[in-house]
Length: 242
Ligand SMILES: [Zn+2]
Image (cartoon, rainbow, N blue to C red):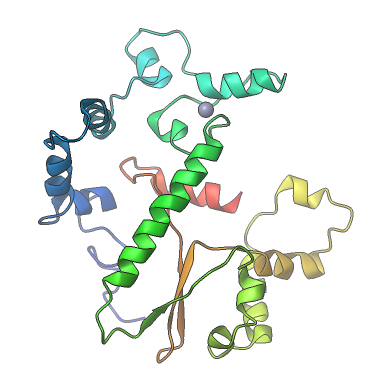
């Protein structure tokens, strides 16, 4: 690794406190686009109002309403509906925050949120693809429903980067450091010898880009949550490893 690669403003450390702050303060980006949207009279007022509240952090969630003394419990009302419909206990509901109801962690919202994730990601992926300069050495990989690490590593473009055996060996070293879910451990055929490498081959990602000349595969993951809070990375890491 080159010296100084970890400096602020690089790909590992935001220049300001958070990536959101970086985006907001970038010329002609964050605040400019936000202002354009909020002042666009063609967009229904309710949508603009909702975005304004999300940015200001005062969306009328149970969590916010409890904080200002207007509600008794911060527990998510949507999760409650989902659990009642299944006849399950409504103890230990997650807090109804803006982040929660916009995440697949919300039981009632999961399907909608997942569909939103796919549709936004598709748009972003196509935009990145379309914005590529002719000289770019990056090739975006077209995925299908069956694409996981195992099926991708049968394709020639991936095999040219390294062999399946070499990759399995490296992946094993990393996989053993990632916690195993209780449900996986409980399975009869849990065998540590094969479990970690199989878990790796079954992994899916939102997208891939390959630089053939440098033999690098970029794994693209799309997260919609903001890093405005200090615990952002910790929370996302935990979710990703679950
Ligand atoms: Zn919920």
